[in-house]
Image 1 (cartoon, protein in one colour):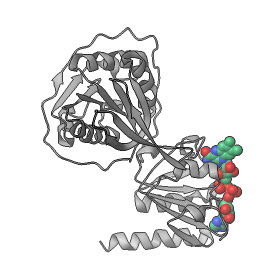
Image 2: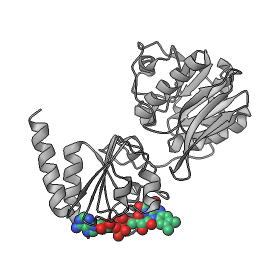
Image 3: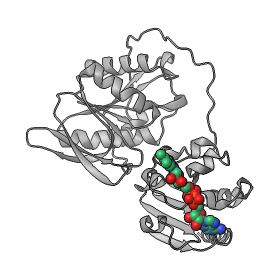
Image 4: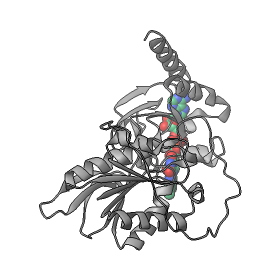
Length: 322
Ligand SMILES: Cc1cc2nc3c(=O)[nH]c(=O)nc-3n(C[C@H](O)[C@H](O)[C@H](O)COP(=O)(O)OP(=O)(O)OC[C@H]3O[C@@H](n4cnc5c(N)ncnc54)[C@H](O)[C@@H]3O)c2cc1C
């Protein structure tokens, strides 16, 4: 059995959960096994909707103790559900929650763990599962054969295209034992509005070439026109021109959107490490020798203060004509 942990932050099932379920279902088909999803905590979304992405069983631990992440309790609950249903492969999203839980769960289940997986390379004739992940800051792909009987995987965001392949199902309500929480979360501050960076399909990112934080209006307008999420290079975040949660790169968030537009960013190796898995990269830079052009699919050599507003205007016109 493949068991997918479908995260539901603040009671909402999001794209990362649908991707994990789509991946889990395909993996289950390759392994010739059934696939179930588990949701922890009370939800506003109907967990049975996960059936649309191909799972035939959805297990819902509808207990408000899991509404806010307590890694100890959530790990215990997931381990218990995995044992109850006889799961031998557990899939979760490579989000901050997934990163927190995957290692703990692997220890509890004595499982082999590969985190940040981008796909399945093969299932060998003896049943060994071989998965693929990007390594060395995106410069190489590695294949990992997981030889333990129980396996835990965390799936990179945007690594798989969502596929609706089934119908909603009735979620089965489960109860699990979990330890009393040892921490109490007193406040949660979330960034409202745009799609979070790891889930964003289009990202408009800017760097030190912007010269001053007061110039960010043109970046915001381009992002608005494209329905994109904004990001930035590290020095921009370090100088407090932009909030730290926008910082992408080796020491920031690693992303893989369908489209990454880099404005006034030189393309240092540490920046590229976090963005070079993007499907299409567009670079706008006035220096034709900027290293970013080597990684770009499309490049515009020009002054960003001229190019960006013209690009925004062209996109608005194009969208208005649709
Ligand atoms: C250990 C370590 C970890 C790091 N981690 C990260 C990381 O995670 N993420 C990250 O981003 N960096 C990281 N860095 C920093 C990285 O090395 C670079 O210094 C940084 O990415 C440069 O940021 P930038 O491109 O915005 O600025 P710059 O290098 O100053 O580049 C600005 C660019 O803007 C262009 N420009 C200027 N004016 C205009 C204009 N009017 N129109 C068009 N283009 C213009 C310039 O030609 C230039 O290419 C790290 C460094 C170290 C040592």
